[in-house]
Image (cartoon, rainbow, N blue to C red; front, side):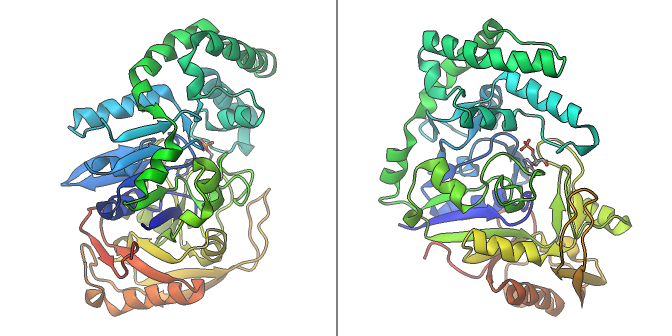
Length: 419
Ligand code: IMP
């Protein structure tokens, strides 16, 4: 069977959730491999909006198994909350959700450390989601993390918590001058939640391999390429590998199992949080695009920064993720523009001032007519086709899907990804 990686080509929020949902019609499994509930995937089905943070977007289909790989960090509270929300909306979870026992768990001290650290950075803060993601990955690498598997034995769990939280509380008290958190309060809070969700926790690798014998699998990236801890705009990044290599370490699945890499690219570029953004629009046009595109963070509610499409980044993403084809999203958001710019290249980025040298743009005429809901490529206005062709030529990659609105059916499909 065939497997597809979906990866955001810029700073996340490219519209992966919708594309996963569309493709999952032909898939038996949908797998998350990194990040945590810092992600926010918005889906609109029959006019009902669902925002998923942790659970793979495939959960909305009855015959798709949603699998969370070892590379994901889990907030037990957020997980339970999301399960409840889905159940309240009559979306079944039973026998559909599977979570790796090796996932690291976000503790209340991780959240406190994330917030305290950001405050201590002042003007040079990263603008994290404040959900404890970074400190949890720090503990994983420092080999003092707590994994879901530890929750099966409360005595061992207590010992491990005492060890790692001693370090957290030292930092909170002595370095950040913040309140400490007791091991008992963490156990009291998290163990009852674990007891309610433990039926979903297992070794997911055999499950993925078995499922793959007769089903296609979607690997759903979270965040975007430029937020990758190694290859992104460091230090203004998240703490995981958001790119193709993250899939391998975050699931335990071999690289030979990735048959197609689908880059998800928004027709313009956005970023939430701080850090360099070469094509950012600081004027009214940036605000207008944000309004037309509903560019508000699905997780934090923060306004997203908007700018022109950055093809220098797209070319890097294509290389890094071995992208075979691009799904271009939110094309309709640009419907009202008389002129559209595309950034083709620039020089160095100054990581203090975020200034960028030698910006090079192409300008094309806009199409000034509605593309909302178009499902046939031939019906697109000529200038929209020209925009698409320009992106293809400069990125040297085919555009295989074009999203023309938030709903499942508002999409042009030019290639069968699973073929
Ligand atoms: P963290 O992942 O909470 O540590 O935040 C690090 C950076 O990644 C911040 O700039 C966040 O705004 C950004 N970030 C984290 N998750 C997402 C996402 O799902 N979409 C877009 N940006 C994100």
